[in-house]
Image (cartoon, rainbow, N blue to C red):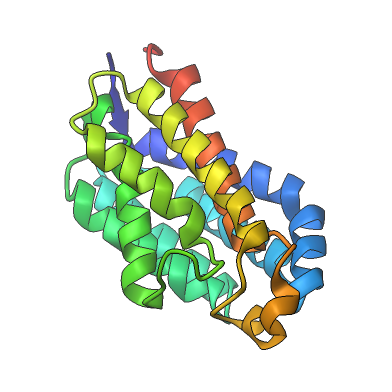
Length: 217
């Protein structure tokens, strides 16, 4: 199985950006039910900025940490409010995880899920059941952490994506404890959390990307 390189990172973020652009109207509508309707814009703009920054500086000699740090800064510059700092922190944690190497074994790709979760958790101080993006990233990270090191990274990422999707769906029955939605109290029950829905979409993209590229030369 091949390695995961700095060039792959750029390609992966292009896939993230394309999916967030596709999901933008849906995420905006979901956020409009319990928030300020800007989550779709934030995710689309943030990942577009990160992907463009990575493409502009795609250097074979650049380490993965350099690329992830660049993506973090680009995301934060493009997105304010809550989402920007949370995903910037997530990407900075991923930079720490992958370090200065220009490429790592493909089997390490699932570690990205744990790093993103840990970065978001550390920055936002959220808890499971708060009706946030952690309710998708958390179950996914648990699946990955339980089965590392990955002998089949694609299967592991598929399982993580499924856990994330289930976690996002579970937010429908939760009462929001954080963010604008928390002001609704019990009225937030019955609505999906847009942050969890976007997280589940990113996890699906990651699994699909891994499946397409695991044997590429």
